[in-house]
Amino acid sequence: MKWITRERPKIDRIACPWLIKRFIDPDAEIIYVPFEQVIQKAEELAATPFDIPDVEFSHYKDECTFDYFLRKYELKDPALQVLAPIIRGADTDVHHLAPQAAGLWAISAGLAFNTPDDGELLEKGMLIYDALYSWAKHLQKVKHTQSPVEHLLLEVFNKYLKQKKGEEKKVPSWALELKEIIQDQIDTNLTLSLKDISEELNVHPAYLSREFSKHFDNLSFGDYIRKLRIEKAIHLLESSQHSLSEIAYLTGFSDQSHFTRIFKKYTGQSPSFYKKIMLKSKKDSKG
Image: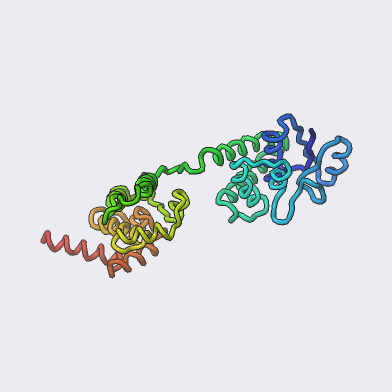
């Protein structure tokens, strides 16, 4: 079967051909022509037009052509359902639909800029969507940083949540183990989120937040992590020659001003003043 659309594809006009060739018709022929020639050439070549106005395979309301192909051919593959909002967000400039949408747009725009031949562009684009599909099907939960804190935290929570009723102790073992894990592993890759954890465990975040605070100094998850970051910052102020901006980075704060504000909230002093007093104290003790 032949499919035809306008030239210089970027998102939909590469994503849809990929979908056609991978899930609908492996032998499909994809034709790119100038916009004003699409309908005429479609008739001449007996090709089905797509991703242009006033044809069946096009945008509907807030959805893009990729969405229509999924509906039309009843493609229920869960990985394709994950790809749909990414492609829709990239194609319609509504990047908040999926965290990957802006990245897909950037890669696609750059690829089109570097590749003047549409046939070659489609060939390269097929590799991108093959990779994106593999990620959606097999790798969504894999983290690039492989943070030991996050992995161990989920392991502990899973262990706790799988306990049988009646086995809970006054201070559950998961809370003790979790405290040790966080304390031992806190580092620059600490990006823990109760929301992410709740989604991973399929447990409501409010429940996790409530249970967490019971066993961690009556602090919320966020406050407890910030407390540990401040404790690590104090250690670095006392034992290293790092600048304040470096310490802010090493303890996971967005910038030095954020670090200073939180440090002062927890200690009553700015980190620069704390360091000054600490250095003076050391100097006096040597004298």
